[in-house]
Amino acid sequence: MEKATFAAGCFWGVEAAFSEMEGVHTTEVGYTGGRVDKPTYEDVCSGTTGHAESIQIEFDPEVVSYEQLLERLWEIHDPTTLNRQGPDMGTQYRSAIFFHTPEQEEKARSSIQQLEQSGQISDPVVTEVRPASHFWRAEEYHQKYLEKKGRA
Image (tube, rainbow, N blue to C red; front, side):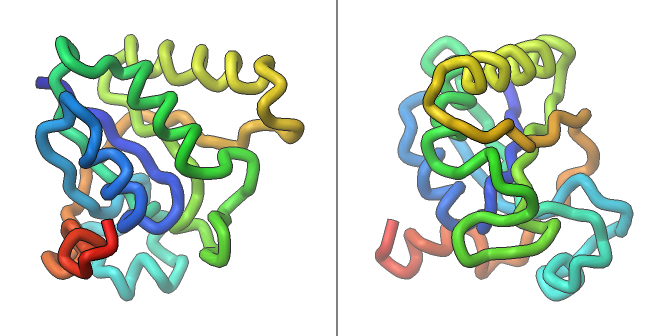
């Protein structure tokens, strides 16, 4: 098993999109990329922690590749909008790839380059590519939120 960590706006929809992929064994939503230990949802929403709403994925690379996860990431959000996805605005909704290995970093940067050259988007990608830092699991009511609400 390997881990992947992404931020792409509100983590509820992001989790739903990845949890349905074959080869994804677990997903959990939380906060990463900031400077505050044990942040709460309210802390992160204040915009003062530096954290992004994120998803951490445990996946089987024999079934789904990291590149396929990146392709899904590009499908489910707009990587050209800074600190915004749809109606959600703020640094906690930024687009980011938090890599766990040098190989993931290389694949992420290559994927961004390919996306920009593909002609599918007209604006530059603003997705951050940063080393993974501590992932703080979000409160339980956020886990599988859309599934619990019957909207996944």
